[in-house]
Length: 630
Image (cartoon, rainbow, N blue to C red; front, side):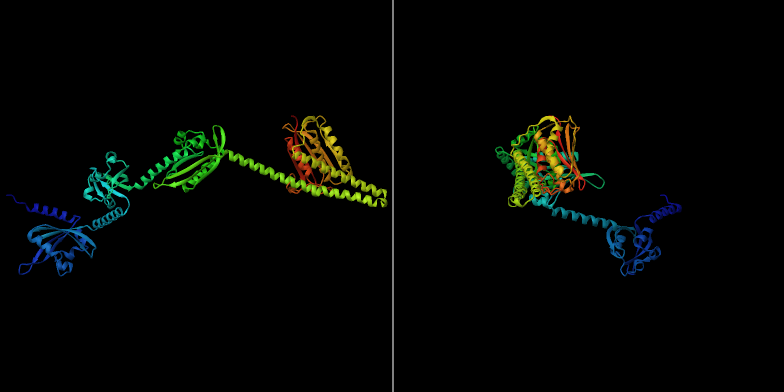
């Protein structure tokens, strides 16, 4: 037998002391204390390490060398029954306790170190207890949430065996967890869906991919109901694959609705084969993507596009829409689909090179899945649009005819009647007063009667021209001729009224200028415009008739005066029958505005245009164009 030297004992003691003082756990050494009857009644604290003092918030000097009653100021030594049992029997004890003053949880391990001696090791587990408490609370919340929702939830481990089913699942199947766990749940899968369901499940596990499938599972009532099952790979905090979590929803009612929809679709197909309008069914999803689900043969015929092309190519109908109407068609779709607003569009579609008018309508039907089915019609309304346009044109022509009729009667009732009354008045005066009138008075009255007669003749001539033109009985025979002699001839009738007002009439027309026009109409146009200029030009003024060729192979003719001019509003309404533009001349000459209307009609008959430039107080210039040649 060998004996350790004192040096070896000291070295061993030093090592123990270093270990004791550097431990993370709090450690204290104790000795049992006995009374005179040999019964243990307290224990002496012989040593503590720094961790013990820190954990319990006490100092070394306050406890070492003192009894537990002295150190902790208590009447009963803490945990005395456990401590004394370990010291006397040598059996290790571990227990958990809570120190209210410190608000800490400890796990205390008690060891017998020698006869009547023991050591206590304190481990602070307060944070661990809090974490566990939070985890337990969250687990309870998650389980409560899973059990209170509509989804049927399951979990499986890496062995592909299910180890969890929530309460809705068990309520759905009417079976216990033990019956469903492992592969027990598969017993309820419909035989027709079993192989497909199992293959999807196993393949997803092998590839660790998200999967989704539909299958029928037996309900507690005995009915097989459709489930939509989505499985997702499950990973722990360290990123390790630990199995799958699945969420199932009962989609039986949706399936029934889809079956009903298929039946309706078949009914549609049977119905629409015999109606004269196109029918379609369009489906849009929650992302607003769309696809034609059904197209009737009649719709394909109307659009000139095959049924197959319409079903396969979403943009087939877009390509057929007239470019000018495409933006409106797209806007209606973009605005209407998200709001599920009924669709109603009228526009042009190009069908085999021909522009046709179409009316496309549809109404939405919401599905359980969130998708929307649109039931629509397409009708070729080309004939209707043409009829409506023709009716509109006829109405406009009718309205114009009514205005012309009113104007005609107005002229007869007022403008024609008034001069006749004046003329009759002169004749009555001559009959009644001729014996008492001087030659000079008779001559003056004769001059006035002549003027009145000329005005009446001019008005009757215009009325005759206008009525013949409207009745389509005015002959139109354009020929190519030299313009100047014909214009000079037409001005002969203007010389006298112009002379009465001392007006200068001049022309600026090339001698060889040719024009392709109806000679009588051209003379009537120029004569009316010059008469008009004379009427509204004061004494001593000037009227100029000019003509020149244009770059567009036309003759531009103008009649300019130095008269009273016109306001902007009067110019704007000058050629409108339904606007009052008549006014008296500078010498009180009557005016109906009819001459300008006739000029406009005659000029447009030639394919020309008429317009006017005027400044109040400075005069007016009327321009019109006539083709230079045939």
